[in-house]
Amino acid sequence: MKLTYNSTRPDLKIPEYGRSIHRMVAHCVSIEDKEEQNRCARAIIKIMGNLFPQLRDVEDYNHKLWDQLHVMSDFQLDVDSPYPKPTAESFQSKPKKVEYPKNDIKLGHYGKTIEKLLQEVVEIKDDEERQKATVSMANVMKRAYVVWNQNSVKDEVIASDLQKLTKGKLKLENPEEDLESTQKVIQQMGVNKKPAQRQNQRKGKKRRKKRN
Image (cartoon, rainbow, N blue to C red; front, side, top):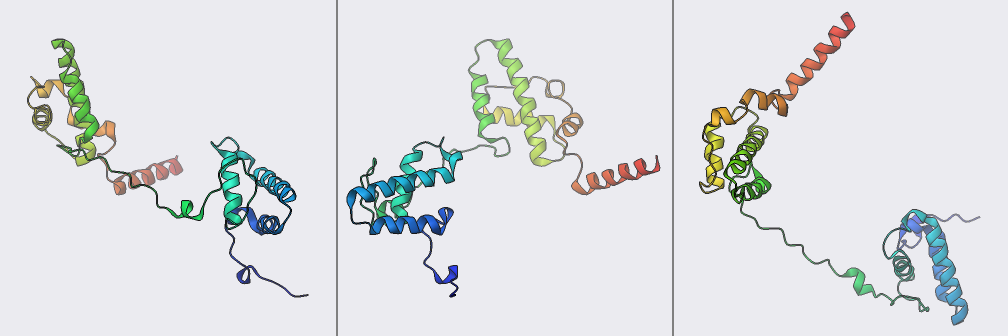
């Protein structure tokens, strides 16, 4: 008995379907009778669908099956498909380049989202509501700054950055009173401890548990 190995066999067009399906497709291509070939193609499509039933909810599921059938036949199959026959070129074409959004961020550690939210605060007409929103956004800025710097930050810096981002339209009258304390923010954000310190603390807790 002569053994054959996959390394000596032709490469599979779509490995997920295995060599048996590829053999069925090759047999379908060799059928000369048009009607019989159509029946064979539909039978293969049904088998392909049964192999991956979880994909039936995918959009254009059947269309993809027929496209894959043509791919496995190396585009030699000429059957009455319910969809246009694809070409080899259509699968070789490169996807369109997606343009990366070009947004100038004034202060990178705050990000574009905070800038947009600040502009919405600027547009609030009621003075009292606008001031409350300003204080809330300033505290958000402080948290973002702490995450970026992972250290301390002066309230005057946040107040200054707030004016820069809004071109002086929003101001904090009393930064030290309006903003949460830096120590509290650091504790809330969990950035006051270095990884090595956290690891040592966890080891200390384990030792105490063993002693108890």
